[in-house]
Image (tube, rainbow, N blue to C red):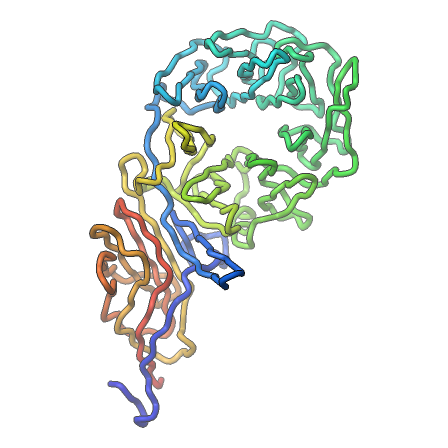
Length: 490
C-alpha cells in the first residue's frame, strides 16, 4: 500500500547504503559486524574537481610461477635484480630461477640445516661485482656466497658467531645480530666470509636482546624486545665501524612481522598503553597504524605472534602490508588508502603469506610470494585472474546493521547493486540478517551483466545487515546498494 494514516504521509523511500567504510568489530571475532574479505577499498581524491568517490574492488588473483621443488616451505628468498634471478632456499638446497627464461638451477646440500629461516642480501664488492650472501644463522659454515655463475663458497671463519639469519649489507660490510645477545657483528671490509673476533658493538640502551636487524636509509636499525636503536657507519677502525645514534632511541616493544617498503619498516609491536599494534617506522618516527578492531584481534591472541609473518605485495596500483596472523585471520593494510581489510587464499580461512618479493620480467613488475605449509611453490599476483592457482576464491562484503532512521517494522521490496558491468555474465549473491548476524537468509543471486542488477521481495525487518559474495573468476567493483523500503507505523 502506498500510504498510511493519510494520503499526505508517503511511507515509501529509497536509501543508499555506504559500503566503503572501515572495518569496525565489537570484539576479536571476525563473524560479526562490518567485514571486507578479498577486496580492497579504492579512494579517488582530487581537490581540483572535488572528487571523493570510493569503490570496493576485488583483489587480483594468483598463479603459479615455479612448481613445488620439495615438500617443505621456502626458508628464504631474494630477487637479484642485476642478474634478474630469483634465489630461494628449500630444505638444505638453494634454487636459482632465471626470471626471463624460466630455467632453474639447483645448488645441492648448501646448508647443514633443513629447517628454520634463511636470510639473504646482495653484497657489492669494491670492483663493482656482486654476490648473494645467504645464511641459516649457524656459526662458521652457516654463511655462503653465490656468484653470477652459481658458484657457492662456504664461510670457513671460526670467528663468525651463531646469529639471527637476517644479514644486512651496508657500506662494504655484512652485519648480523648474534643469537641471544645485544651484539651486532660486522664482517671484514669487502669480504662477507671473513670475520674478526671482537668486531661488534652492543645495543645496550636497555637490557634486552636483539630480535631483528633492518636498514633504513644509511642506518642499521636494531629491534630489541623493548627498544629500537639506530647505528651508522662512522668509519671507525679497527673494530666495528658502527656508532650508535642515541637521539632517536624508541622504547617500543618489538613482536615480529617485520617488512620493508621503500624507506619504511612495518612491524608488530606494543604501544604505550600495552596494546599490540602495527607500527610504521619512517625514519626516526614510529607511528601506530592499526585500528581498534585490529588491536582487539591482536590482544585476543595469547601466543605465537613472534612467529607471524608480514610481507609487502603490490598490484592494481596499490601496495599492501599483509599480516599472516596465525590460523584465524590475515589482516591487510592498504598503504595507499590506509584502510584495513582481510584476505583468504582459495577456500582457506587465511592467506598464509610467508614471504613476498617484487620482481621484474620484461619491463613489468609482479609480486612473487611463497606460502607457509608443506609446499615450496612460488606464486605471483596476476591482475588478469580472479582465482588462486586455478581455484575460485570468494570476495565478501558485510555491512553494519541499518534501521533506515526508524525502529518501526519495515518491508523491503528490492535491493539494487551499483557497480561495474562485466563483459560477460557474472553473479553476486545477497544475504541478509535481521537478528544481529546470528543467522542469515538464503542467498538471492543477480547477474551483474545487466542494466539493473537487483534482488526482490526481501521481507520485513526492524534492523538489517547485508552480506554480498562474489565467487566467479571475474572482476568486481562496487559503489553502493540501493534499497527500496516501506516504513510501517509500529
